[in-house]
Image 1 (spheres, rainbow, N blue to C red):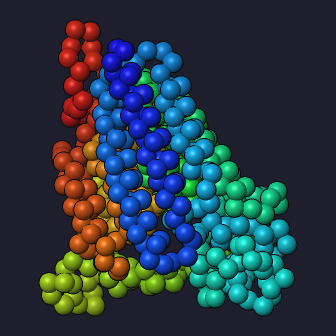
Image 2 (spheres, rainbow, N blue to C red; image 1 turned 90 degrees about the vertical axis):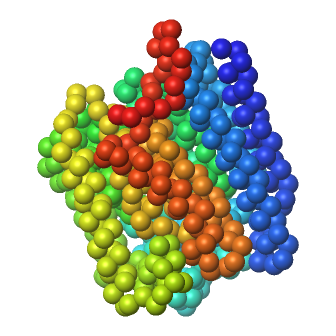
Image 3 (cartoon, rainbow, N blue to C red; image 1 turned 60 degrees about the horizontal axis):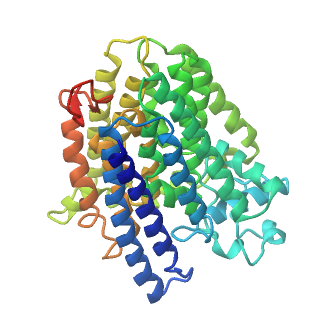
Length: 454
């Protein structure tokens, strides 16, 4: 056992070393040639980190570990996050909008009412936050109500980027604690929390850039734990909270209501959603913020921002209905997967099945939507801890490549490095409508084997 433990420690040390090297790049905030070159080098270092991470995941899933190994895993995870907190956000400016929305609410103003550049908010502008807000001149905030409540809580305590990042890490810690309990419920080794805690995409999305998706991770982890413990009403409320941070967790609903557990989950979830939007209803229909216009700006409405349609458009002119047809096909595929999940027999201790189904639904949805923002995929690492599959772990990590596109605006060729393997792995996971699961661990006298079909 010393040899695997030594290898695990070596992989953790290598991840820490690559993180230090990445921080030494000192990437400037201004968009110039120096930034472009250094970001490209950073992506290379993160690709190497991903290779080490895959090796660590394989190692931790193939072996049994002595008591206390989980503290090594968590110690490396904390150290990695501490390193990334040293420097300001590098790859995204979204956190400045979070701080701004918190500041606006601390001043007693509904954040959905005005765009940041509106004269009504002129007194709140400064030189540190306001100039770095994206879409400041034309977009109201896009973030749903629970996200705004988090921003408001931070804004009333500290008007700073550091405070906001610490809040995100706090929610992430909630998710990790819930994962540890889920692993215990599923009868799995707690060391598997490494699948989430060492993930480079997770690290740079949350500890470095402080994306609000970390709040959704914490609430989704709580929802999974509550659902596994048969606290259906609270699970529905927590899942709705995650949806009101980032809409993506909505796809997990079929996994939560499987086994006839529908009404408490649904009613509690709907109550949270209604109350959340009611808190900000003074803005009228503007309570939806920039969300209705977001699909158009990102090319989702036209299909230009969707990976598969972007590729087809290079071969032949697409009709106007192409995006609608594609959306209909995606909905049909998703419904087929959801129905297959709903038809599965309920089991007494279904923590692993719950995470497996959530991960499968999430992987199908994210591969179909094919976002081009890397941090949108970080939440997939959460269900992968309890029910890892090749497709899920790939989609939770490989989008690091989307940080820097060799050809700006390329929505097909470079993203194909992410989506082609993801779809192939997902098709393997879907056959025969069940995800590939990792074994619980080698039995006595048996040679460890990493995979089996369930």
